[in-house]
Image (cartoon, rainbow, N blue to C red; front, side, top):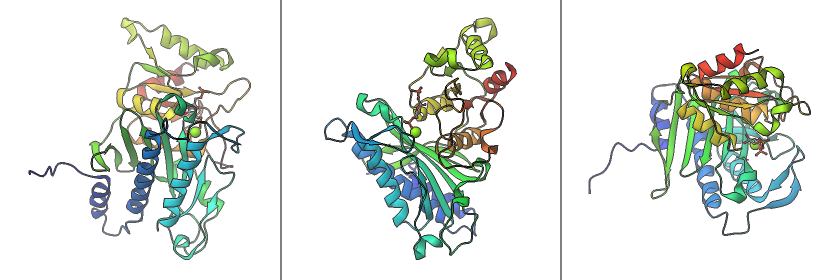
Length: 334
Ligand code: AHM
Ligand code: MG
């Protein structure tokens, strides 16, 4: 049987990248491998979500007062479990946990990285078989190695991320991650149980024709946001349109599509929630890093997302993200 040497697994890819850096310790590749393993376990459960009793609510609210789904908890425990048992992560922050968890054991205290994640984003879509995803962000610790990590390791500006990524559980399961060396996408080959490189060196098209926003909130948005949305609707073939509205309600799926096809995704502040809904540290920062590394832009309407100084683990921010020229057009409607 001929062996297809063109296939490169996630582990092979990260190890190969590491070889270019003789001083690399391999901890980051280890961390990505751990995340890949958790993603495969979550994938198995997501795929049988309709068959077993893991759909629906767990009967509790998370720290943001939102209903927690059973699969959210499963995903949270998988990611936390592999990171705790691995050797690369000193602690985690998660959408599902009130506070950060510092692993504080001999090995973890020597680990270079901390990780923040949203274990299952878009989880209101689970019950109806619509794409959902996991989002993660990795920082190098700023506190002394050998001691337990602290909150300061987590409350860093997004520009200091060393890696960020997401897993999308869609028509196929993909893991996409970015480092300063670029953005690469891996599709899960279910037959061998491995993520294999399918989208090398992803670049976000400079412009696109898709805008993604919750139109139901239109009248609660600031005037300049309304103006931009109206401009998107008024595009015609003389000015690069018409634009198409696409909004799944799973940010992972919406931003993934726009990253590949070109487009803009918006979750603006509203009159009742001026900071919007999305969380800076484990939803906006990782996507801002990925999209910027792919050539796009991400702001809160005034400031680059990656420059925001965080003060709390669960803080929210308005978010505008996507193709460079569309983001510039949006900024110019102000
Ligand atoms: P979640 O973390 O509770 O799943 O919420 C985040 C999700 C995003 O994936 C999505 O973009 C947004 O909520 C949709 O919100 P809305 O229904 O208000 O448009
Ligand atoms: Mg979320």
